[in-house]
Image 1 (tube, rainbow, N blue to C red):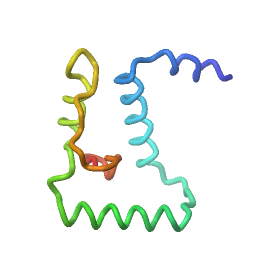
Image 2: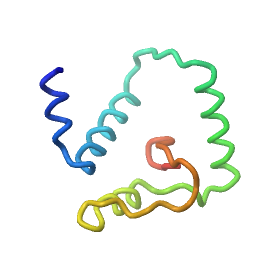
Image 3: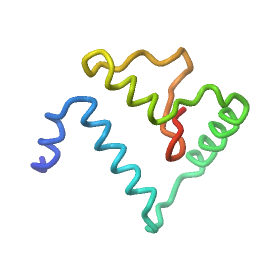
Length: 93
């Protein structure tokens, strides 16, 4: 296993999420082409439509980190909305 990956495994969940966020933002700034399967595009369209229909289901980045950092680093439970995922650079669903 790569030494950097071993180091990442030792991070707390909050620290891992911050690394993922930084990587995600870096990928978003990249001009490198990345082929997506059609089902990924379909799912992104479905989620975008779901968010458009009910914008209240999204969390701001600040609210997400507030929940992650609360309770001694344990994430506060998200609402019963199924499967929130990163969607866009400053809103999460």
